[in-house]
Length: 213
Image (tube, rainbow, N blue to C red):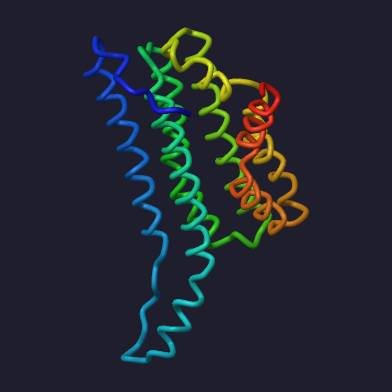
């Protein structure tokens, strides 16, 4: 999304700052709590080899940390830019925003599940289900804002791209990875990585831009 050149919401500046600060705070706390899932076991004495072995044994936790950090970071970036396009908000929007943030708050828990049981179908499916829920809530929030006229007219054409059916590709892939996890947990996780490397909504936007030109 494009950043606006000026604040389009002077009458509601304080309210928006509180909404943004709360949203940023929830995501900042969630992303900070991720590191608490990396728990180094007690190492007797000064056994450096045992320490090195213990650190290497934590690679699933580090992988889950990196994945969850990327997920929350991407959600924060899009959410931040999206709020910059709004001119006002209402009760239903706040409710949808809280729903989205509730799933973000659960990501440290899901990350711990992935770190411990990421090689199992259930552990992978739980993480995929939470990613799906967060992505769907975020889509619903943007779609509602566009259709309720909460987005500033200068930015509606850009923001509208994130409320079209093509924006459901991302949560759809997360949903697809749930049954895939019961066939192969690693295939489901590979789908997540591919989704973040080659973001489907970005490809759809590029095709739309190419069609217009």
